[in-house]
Image (tube, rainbow over all chains, first blue to last red; front, side):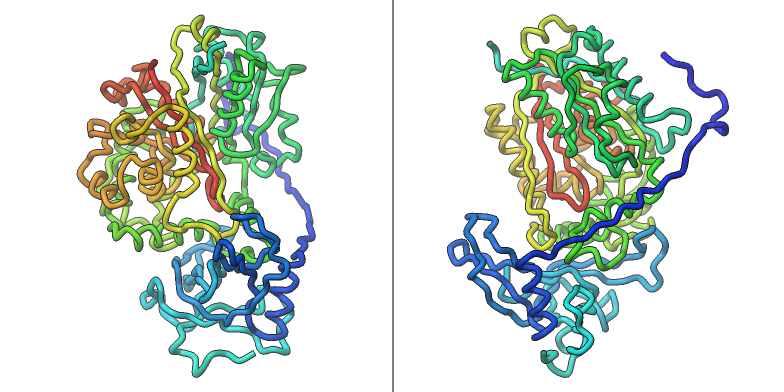
Length: 165
Length: 382
């Protein structure tokens, strides 16, 4: 066996970073989703009638039967139920988040999928699995066609009425 | 030609939170030396080599090019699996069963102490279009899985805490485990919340390590001192989308275990499996994986854990080594640590961690958040 260092304080390291940059293509399905979100304030979905699966985020193919779904578009209201959630106490760098943020996976009504987002306008202790929520969207003129157009989700009762497109 | 494949050599360095004195290649060299010695072979006898590693965990692009020399694999057949460790084991089984090689080495390592922004690596694994915008700790995925699991099963948080208590206690009996300790469920539940309901002590601590396994055909295995037979292997990946996954269930592990059981001819896993080394990267994962591997019906998992059935002296010991909660979490190498510990059990070499009559063991692995990938391995004394 090789001999280890006897003074670990002398152990040499080099600092480095991987400064890589990318473009991520939204694709045909992603383009339609974000354009629809920006223009109408609703979610574009694709449905496989055979498997009875409605994809959100939308996909051009069914992952089960492999059908082409490029002509199987529909639109659904930006409302759903909290499928699961967590109260997050750390940011992406491991630093404390104060106040903590409530992040949920929202199962969007009429779909088999959903979206990840922040829960807004409620206290962490008041969140419940399966509670109904509506998306809180940026005003139409400020929407750019990205996930930033969705500020988060809020309990349905708090909003005066469902946000209109 | 026999179809049987055995693990004939195991070599590992004890997982530790820091390894400042040695490079990952030196850790790998030590593990390879131990494994080849354990099998009674030399590096020249090994006919093909498989490494399990990923660029972003190493900080080197095309990192598989850096794996041959520490394994004795220079100018030899070698390839890398950038995936779960059991996918590497499965590739070795395939090389042997197709007759390409009789002796294959599988290596995995992790030098997590060198990854200064590990959470960023995990965050970059999320879908860039729909899932990356939150900029919170990627443990949020685990927090949401745990919440849904507890919601669907009605399990109390105490059951999750009990997994930590058990595995940390098991680790006390394993001389290479770094995180042995005597805790109460209240200690666990009093630890800091990271992503509620997930707590700090329910997350296995990151560790450095390296493991090498030597696999052999039946003919080659008969010439080695301590073969442990691979009766079945399986692996599966779910949909990568967070939107498409089963939050409350480890469905990938269910498919992987079924595949391994089918190959092994196991029809009643809860009776035929004597002990299990199961992924416990997060404590709730052990509960999900127990259910997925059909070692307990969903409704019984909590009771089994609370009543001590999964302790070393229980009916179905789970992670007698201490698991990742007790030994440390070693990223790409985690599945091979679980496998190495299961081999030691079946050989009767586990010392104070030894399970009585440990003839048939199950390994269940998971590639970690945000993946839905994992594997299963059935190991047996004959």
